[in-house]
Amino acid sequence: MKAIVQDTYGPPAVLRLEETDRPVPGRGEVLIRVHAAGVDQGVWHLMAGMPYAVRAVFGLRAPKTRVRGMDVAGRVESVGPDVTRFRPGDEVYGSCNGSFAEYACAKEDALAPKPRNLGFAEAAAVPVSACTALKALRDSGRVQPGQKVLVLGASGGVGTFAVQLAKAFGAHVTGVCSAAKADLVRSIGADEVLDYGQTDPTDGTRRYDVILDIAGNRPVSRLRRALTARGTLVIVGGEGGGRWIGGNQRQLGALLLSPFVGHRLSTLASTEHHNELEVLTELIEAGSVTPVVDRTYPLAEVPDAIRYLREGHVRGKIVIRL
Image (tube, rainbow, N blue to C red; front, side):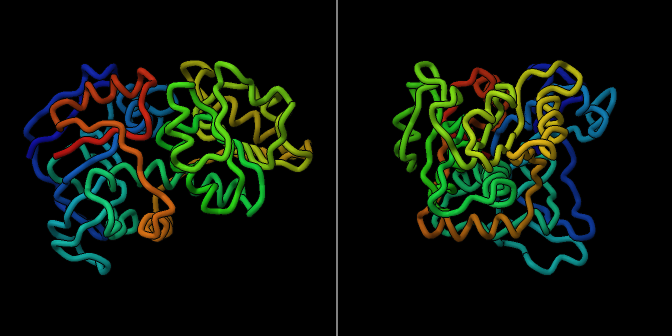
């Protein structure tokens, strides 16, 4: 089968299209014929091995898993022992290791039936980013109807889902993005859109019950100025912080500070599970949530897709079509 592989950490140039063996599903695994695969920042971190803390888990000198890609949508080709929820021919979506390939193996628990009203490309945009947004708002943020929610990074992969989910939970949503993406964020349901080039949403003139900071770099002290007295800050990813632990430095600081202040300061280490995917499927099929796909690329152009992602111009998600 054709797959995008890497044997060393580095820039997108380390990725190449190669013929490799088709994976064999193990116990509790499903073999998927991949129709589409999503691209997100997590793919870049694993490709680059940055921050260096990533390498402690995924391979010190080289990636343990050669094939990149996490989001996946496709049809079940075969199932391994003990799989009970799927059979060959089922249309599924979810996450796995190695979705930038014609075939990929995924754990049964990381998959759900594909929403009936989505094509494979749209479905592949959902799992990692939407599960992250769902857990950040529902579990960490505990968003309630009528609360004011601020989404920093509202036009990206996680952000576009976060805006829609917060609205589905009954919140008043303010999205922060560039002026060029304001219409998009408004079109997916934001009650108010702030251009970060013109307005500082953390200057203390506005207060929010929940702030979701996606891949930002603002100091925690500054974010707290925009919270209500008992407000909640949820940090998802982040930039800066150095080459060793990256944005985790800010997350660690927030966790250490949280017990000593009135605000609840929370971080997120998201994994995808069929329970969350099923919640998302219900919302998608009801029309409350719709994936935003910026553009699609063929499998051979995964390096170009990742370069475009890192340029910071993406609206929603990028998808690889097979």
